[in-house]
Image (cartoon, rainbow, N blue to C red; front, side):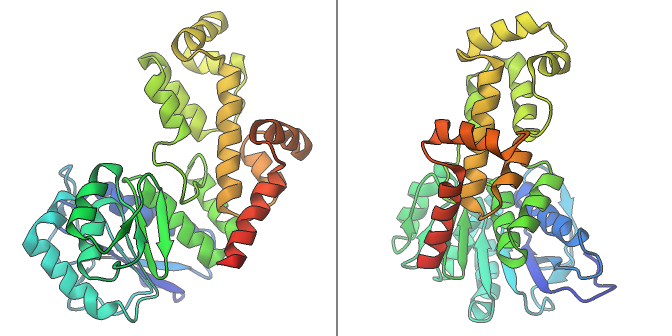
Length: 330
Protein backbone atom coordinates (compact mmCIF):
# COMPACT_ATOMS: atom_id res chain seq x y z
CA UNK A 1 0.00 0.00 0.00
CA UNK A 2 1.14 3.52 -0.70
CA UNK A 3 2.35 5.65 2.16
CA UNK A 4 0.97 8.83 0.55
CA UNK A 5 -2.10 10.54 2.03
CA UNK A 6 -3.40 10.45 5.61
CA UNK A 7 -1.36 8.43 8.11
CA UNK A 8 -2.50 4.87 8.72
CA UNK A 9 -3.48 3.63 12.17
CA UNK A 10 -1.72 0.26 12.02
CA UNK A 11 1.28 -0.99 10.08
CA UNK A 12 1.27 -4.62 9.00
CA UNK A 13 4.33 -6.53 7.80
CA UNK A 14 3.80 -9.58 5.59
CA UNK A 15 6.98 -11.65 5.28
CA UNK A 16 7.90 -12.97 1.83
CA UNK A 17 10.53 -15.49 0.71
CA UNK A 18 11.14 -17.77 -2.23
CA UNK A 19 8.66 -20.68 -2.34
CA UNK A 20 6.14 -18.87 -0.15
CA UNK A 21 2.46 -19.69 -0.64
CA UNK A 22 1.15 -16.74 -2.65
CA UNK A 23 -2.37 -16.94 -1.30
CA UNK A 24 -1.06 -16.71 2.27
CA UNK A 25 0.14 -13.23 1.28
CA UNK A 26 -2.62 -12.17 -1.09
CA UNK A 27 -5.57 -13.21 1.12
CA UNK A 28 -4.70 -11.13 4.21
CA UNK A 29 -3.43 -8.30 2.00
CA UNK A 30 -6.83 -8.02 0.31
CA UNK A 31 -8.65 -8.11 3.66
CA UNK A 32 -6.62 -5.22 5.04
CA UNK A 33 -6.87 -3.30 1.77
CA UNK A 34 -10.65 -3.76 1.61
CA UNK A 35 -11.10 -2.67 5.22
CA UNK A 36 -8.94 0.40 4.58
CA UNK A 37 -10.73 1.36 1.37
CA UNK A 38 -14.02 1.70 3.26
CA UNK A 39 -12.77 4.94 4.88
CA UNK A 40 -10.00 6.53 2.78
CA UNK A 41 -10.00 9.67 4.93
CA UNK A 42 -8.99 7.60 7.97
CA UNK A 43 -7.04 4.64 6.57
CA UNK A 44 -6.79 1.74 8.97
CA UNK A 45 -3.90 -0.29 7.61
CA UNK A 46 -0.65 0.17 5.76
CA UNK A 47 0.75 -3.16 4.60
CA UNK A 48 4.35 -3.85 3.55
CA UNK A 49 5.71 -6.97 1.90
CA UNK A 50 8.98 -7.54 3.77
CA UNK A 51 11.80 -9.80 2.62
CA UNK A 52 15.54 -10.32 2.99
CA UNK A 53 16.19 -8.25 -0.16
CA UNK A 54 14.16 -6.18 -2.62
CA UNK A 55 14.63 -8.84 -5.31
CA UNK A 56 11.39 -10.47 -6.48
CA UNK A 57 10.44 -13.64 -4.63
CA UNK A 58 8.86 -16.55 -6.46
CA UNK A 59 5.88 -18.29 -4.89
CA UNK A 60 5.27 -22.03 -4.86
CA UNK A 61 2.95 -21.55 -7.83
CA UNK A 62 5.47 -19.50 -9.83
CA UNK A 63 4.04 -16.03 -9.22
CA UNK A 64 6.62 -13.29 -8.61
CA UNK A 65 6.10 -10.82 -5.75
CA UNK A 66 8.08 -7.60 -5.36
CA UNK A 67 8.88 -6.76 -1.71
CA UNK A 68 8.51 -3.19 -0.51
CA UNK A 69 10.91 -3.37 2.44
CA UNK A 70 13.93 -5.37 3.51
CA UNK A 71 14.65 -6.75 6.95
CA UNK A 72 17.18 -3.98 7.49
CA UNK A 73 14.93 -0.99 6.67
CA UNK A 74 11.44 -2.24 7.61
CA UNK A 75 11.07 -0.39 10.91
CA UNK A 76 8.43 -1.31 13.47
CA UNK A 77 5.06 -2.97 12.84
CA UNK A 78 1.89 -3.29 14.86
CA UNK A 79 1.26 -6.72 13.30
CA UNK A 80 3.66 -9.16 11.65
CA UNK A 81 2.35 -12.12 9.64
CA UNK A 82 4.43 -15.12 8.57
CA UNK A 83 2.91 -16.91 5.56
CA UNK A 84 3.45 -20.59 4.97
CA UNK A 85 5.32 -22.23 2.15
CA UNK A 86 7.93 -24.88 1.41
CA UNK A 87 10.70 -22.27 1.41
CA UNK A 88 10.27 -21.57 5.11
CA UNK A 89 11.26 -25.14 5.90
CA UNK A 90 14.69 -24.48 4.37
CA UNK A 91 17.10 -23.93 7.31
CA UNK A 92 18.79 -20.84 5.85
CA UNK A 93 15.53 -19.07 4.99
CA UNK A 94 14.01 -19.94 8.35
CA UNK A 95 17.07 -18.73 10.27
CA UNK A 96 17.10 -15.34 8.53
CA UNK A 97 13.43 -14.75 9.27
CA UNK A 98 13.74 -15.88 12.89
CA UNK A 99 16.74 -13.59 13.37
CA UNK A 100 14.64 -10.63 12.18
CA UNK A 101 11.61 -11.61 14.27
CA UNK A 102 13.15 -12.26 17.68
CA UNK A 103 14.12 -8.65 18.53
CA UNK A 104 10.61 -7.53 17.54
CA UNK A 105 8.63 -9.93 19.71
CA UNK A 106 8.55 -7.57 22.70
CA UNK A 107 7.45 -4.50 20.72
CA UNK A 108 4.99 -5.99 18.21
CA UNK A 109 1.35 -5.96 19.37
CA UNK A 110 0.53 -9.23 17.63
CA UNK A 111 2.38 -11.73 15.52
CA UNK A 112 0.75 -14.40 13.41
CA UNK A 113 1.45 -17.41 11.25
CA UNK A 114 -0.65 -18.74 8.40
CA UNK A 115 -0.62 -22.46 7.70
CA UNK A 116 3.00 -23.71 7.73
CA UNK A 117 4.23 -20.24 8.65
CA UNK A 118 4.19 -21.75 12.13
CA UNK A 119 7.61 -23.29 11.36
CA UNK A 120 9.05 -19.77 11.48
CA UNK A 121 7.00 -18.46 14.38
CA UNK A 122 7.58 -21.53 16.56
CA UNK A 123 11.34 -21.33 15.98
CA UNK A 124 11.42 -17.97 17.79
CA UNK A 125 10.23 -19.65 21.02
CA UNK A 126 7.30 -17.26 21.41
CA UNK A 127 4.78 -20.09 21.07
CA UNK A 128 6.27 -22.25 23.83
CA UNK A 129 3.53 -23.15 26.30
CA UNK A 130 0.86 -21.58 24.08
CA UNK A 131 -2.04 -23.13 22.19
CA UNK A 132 -1.41 -23.21 18.45
CA UNK A 133 -2.65 -24.74 15.21
CA UNK A 134 -1.62 -25.21 11.61
CA UNK A 135 -2.80 -27.09 8.54
CA UNK A 136 -4.12 -30.48 9.65
CA UNK A 137 -1.51 -32.30 7.54
CA UNK A 138 1.39 -30.72 9.48
CA UNK A 139 0.04 -30.91 13.05
CA UNK A 140 2.01 -34.03 14.01
CA UNK A 141 5.27 -32.84 12.47
CA UNK A 142 5.07 -29.43 14.16
CA UNK A 143 4.35 -31.07 17.51
CA UNK A 144 7.35 -33.37 17.03
CA UNK A 145 9.70 -30.53 16.12
CA UNK A 146 8.39 -28.11 18.75
CA UNK A 147 7.22 -30.22 21.72
CA UNK A 148 6.67 -27.16 23.95
CA UNK A 149 3.72 -26.07 21.79
CA UNK A 150 0.18 -27.03 22.81
CA UNK A 151 -0.98 -28.04 19.35
CA UNK A 152 -4.71 -28.23 18.61
CA UNK A 153 -5.97 -29.93 15.49
CA UNK A 154 -8.84 -28.96 13.23
CA UNK A 155 -9.13 -25.27 14.16
CA UNK A 156 -9.35 -22.36 11.75
CA UNK A 157 -7.21 -20.12 13.92
CA UNK A 158 -6.18 -19.72 17.55
CA UNK A 159 -5.37 -16.56 19.49
CA UNK A 160 -3.21 -17.01 22.58
CA UNK A 161 -1.88 -13.76 24.00
CA UNK A 162 -0.18 -11.74 21.24
CA UNK A 163 0.21 -14.83 19.06
CA UNK A 164 -2.15 -15.97 16.31
CA UNK A 165 -1.77 -19.23 14.41
CA UNK A 166 -4.04 -20.53 11.67
CA UNK A 167 -4.79 -23.52 9.48
CA UNK A 168 -4.70 -23.89 5.70
CA UNK A 169 -4.27 -21.12 3.15
CA UNK A 170 -7.86 -19.84 3.19
CA UNK A 171 -7.65 -19.55 6.97
CA UNK A 172 -5.44 -16.52 6.39
CA UNK A 173 -8.55 -14.63 5.33
CA UNK A 174 -10.40 -15.71 8.48
CA UNK A 175 -7.39 -14.67 10.56
CA UNK A 176 -7.16 -11.23 8.93
CA UNK A 177 -10.92 -10.70 9.33
CA UNK A 178 -10.59 -11.56 13.03
CA UNK A 179 -7.93 -8.85 13.30
CA UNK A 180 -10.16 -6.34 11.52
CA UNK A 181 -12.94 -7.24 13.90
CA UNK A 182 -10.69 -6.63 16.92
CA UNK A 183 -9.43 -3.31 15.52
CA UNK A 184 -12.52 -1.83 13.86
CA UNK A 185 -15.46 -3.77 15.30
CA UNK A 186 -17.70 -6.60 14.08
CA UNK A 187 -19.69 -4.47 11.62
CA UNK A 188 -16.52 -3.45 9.78
CA UNK A 189 -15.32 -7.05 9.66
CA UNK A 190 -18.65 -8.29 8.32
CA UNK A 191 -18.75 -5.50 5.74
CA UNK A 192 -15.21 -6.38 4.64
CA UNK A 193 -16.07 -10.06 4.32
CA UNK A 194 -19.25 -9.27 2.42
CA UNK A 195 -17.39 -6.97 0.01
CA UNK A 196 -14.93 -9.80 -0.66
CA UNK A 197 -17.80 -12.30 -1.11
CA UNK A 198 -16.52 -14.43 1.75
CA UNK A 199 -19.41 -16.79 2.61
CA UNK A 200 -19.14 -16.12 6.35
CA UNK A 201 -16.75 -15.15 9.10
CA UNK A 202 -15.73 -18.48 10.54
CA UNK A 203 -15.08 -18.80 14.24
CA UNK A 204 -11.56 -19.77 15.18
CA UNK A 205 -12.59 -23.06 16.78
CA UNK A 206 -14.54 -24.13 13.71
CA UNK A 207 -13.33 -27.21 11.85
CA UNK A 208 -10.94 -26.52 8.96
CA UNK A 209 -13.09 -28.61 6.61
CA UNK A 210 -16.13 -26.33 6.29
CA UNK A 211 -19.70 -27.35 5.53
CA UNK A 212 -19.70 -26.02 1.93
CA UNK A 213 -16.49 -27.96 1.28
CA UNK A 214 -18.07 -31.12 2.70
CA UNK A 215 -21.01 -30.69 0.35
CA UNK A 216 -18.71 -30.06 -2.63
CA UNK A 217 -16.64 -33.13 -1.79
CA UNK A 218 -19.76 -35.32 -1.76
CA UNK A 219 -21.33 -33.77 -4.84
CA UNK A 220 -21.08 -34.97 -8.42
CA UNK A 221 -18.65 -32.90 -10.43
CA UNK A 222 -21.44 -31.06 -12.26
CA UNK A 223 -22.89 -29.80 -8.97
CA UNK A 224 -19.63 -28.82 -7.26
CA UNK A 225 -19.32 -25.40 -8.92
CA UNK A 226 -22.97 -24.60 -8.20
CA UNK A 227 -22.54 -25.50 -4.52
CA UNK A 228 -19.43 -23.30 -4.32
CA UNK A 229 -21.44 -20.42 -5.77
CA UNK A 230 -24.28 -21.01 -3.29
CA UNK A 231 -21.82 -20.90 -0.39
CA UNK A 232 -20.46 -17.54 -1.56
CA UNK A 233 -23.86 -15.98 -2.29
CA UNK A 234 -26.12 -16.95 0.59
CA UNK A 235 -27.99 -13.63 0.42
CA UNK A 236 -28.93 -14.17 -3.24
CA UNK A 237 -32.08 -15.70 -4.72
CA UNK A 238 -31.40 -19.40 -4.17
CA UNK A 239 -34.80 -20.71 -5.16
CA UNK A 240 -35.00 -23.82 -7.32
CA UNK A 241 -35.83 -21.84 -10.50
CA UNK A 242 -32.87 -19.48 -9.89
CA UNK A 243 -30.45 -22.35 -9.26
CA UNK A 244 -31.68 -24.30 -12.27
CA UNK A 245 -31.22 -21.23 -14.46
CA UNK A 246 -27.69 -20.74 -13.17
CA UNK A 247 -26.83 -24.39 -13.79
CA UNK A 248 -28.53 -24.23 -17.22
CA UNK A 249 -30.55 -27.39 -16.60
CA UNK A 250 -34.19 -28.08 -15.86
CA UNK A 251 -35.63 -27.83 -12.35
CA UNK A 252 -36.65 -31.50 -12.24
CA UNK A 253 -33.25 -32.63 -13.47
CA UNK A 254 -31.47 -30.46 -10.88
CA UNK A 255 -33.64 -31.81 -8.08
CA UNK A 256 -32.97 -35.37 -9.22
CA UNK A 257 -29.20 -34.73 -9.37
CA UNK A 258 -29.26 -33.38 -5.81
CA UNK A 259 -31.27 -36.35 -4.54
CA UNK A 260 -29.03 -38.88 -6.30
CA UNK A 261 -25.73 -37.20 -5.48
CA UNK A 262 -26.35 -35.63 -2.07
CA UNK A 263 -29.47 -37.36 -0.76
CA UNK A 264 -31.16 -33.99 -0.18
CA UNK A 265 -33.04 -31.40 -2.19
CA UNK A 266 -31.48 -28.11 -3.38
CA UNK A 267 -33.70 -26.26 -0.90
CA UNK A 268 -32.55 -28.41 2.01
CA UNK A 269 -28.90 -27.79 1.16
CA UNK A 270 -29.49 -24.03 0.91
CA UNK A 271 -31.18 -23.94 4.31
CA UNK A 272 -28.42 -26.00 5.89
CA UNK A 273 -25.62 -23.83 4.49
CA UNK A 274 -27.42 -20.62 5.44
CA UNK A 275 -28.00 -21.71 9.01
CA UNK A 276 -24.47 -23.04 9.43
CA UNK A 277 -23.08 -19.74 8.11
CA UNK A 278 -25.33 -17.88 10.54
CA UNK A 279 -24.03 -19.98 13.41
CA UNK A 280 -20.45 -19.23 12.37
CA UNK A 281 -21.13 -15.49 12.23
CA UNK A 282 -22.84 -15.41 15.60
CA UNK A 283 -20.10 -17.52 17.16
CA UNK A 284 -17.37 -15.24 15.85
CA UNK A 285 -18.97 -11.82 16.25
CA UNK A 286 -21.43 -10.11 18.63
CA UNK A 287 -23.41 -8.75 15.67
CA UNK A 288 -27.09 -7.84 15.42
CA UNK A 289 -29.28 -10.80 14.61
CA UNK A 290 -31.03 -8.80 11.90
CA UNK A 291 -27.74 -8.26 10.10
CA UNK A 292 -26.94 -11.97 10.23
CA UNK A 293 -30.42 -12.72 8.89
CA UNK A 294 -29.87 -10.33 5.97
CA UNK A 295 -26.43 -11.69 5.11
CA UNK A 296 -27.71 -15.27 5.06
CA UNK A 297 -30.69 -14.55 2.84
CA UNK A 298 -33.63 -14.35 5.23
CA UNK A 299 -36.30 -11.74 4.58
CA UNK A 300 -37.06 -11.08 8.24
CA UNK A 301 -35.30 -11.60 11.58
CA UNK A 302 -38.37 -13.44 12.87
CA UNK A 303 -38.29 -16.04 10.09
CA UNK A 304 -34.57 -16.41 10.58
CA UNK A 305 -34.94 -16.80 14.36
CA UNK A 306 -37.49 -19.58 14.02
CA UNK A 307 -35.41 -21.47 11.44
CA UNK A 308 -32.23 -21.03 13.50
CA UNK A 309 -33.85 -22.30 16.70
CA UNK A 310 -35.15 -25.40 14.91
CA UNK A 311 -31.70 -26.18 13.51
CA UNK A 312 -29.49 -25.33 16.49
CA UNK A 313 -31.80 -25.85 19.45
CA UNK A 314 -31.49 -22.28 20.72
CA UNK A 315 -32.33 -18.75 19.56
CA UNK A 316 -29.63 -16.89 17.62
CA UNK A 317 -29.34 -14.39 20.48
CA UNK A 318 -28.20 -17.19 22.79
CA UNK A 319 -25.37 -18.19 20.44
CA UNK A 320 -24.31 -14.55 20.07
CA UNK A 321 -24.45 -13.87 23.82
CA UNK A 322 -22.39 -16.96 24.59
CA UNK A 323 -19.61 -15.42 22.51
CA UNK A 324 -19.91 -12.19 24.46
CA UNK A 325 -19.76 -14.02 27.79
CA UNK A 326 -16.68 -15.98 26.73
CA UNK A 327 -14.91 -12.75 25.75
CA UNK A 328 -15.82 -11.15 29.08
CA UNK A 329 -14.58 -14.20 30.99
CA UNK A 330 -11.34 -14.18 28.99
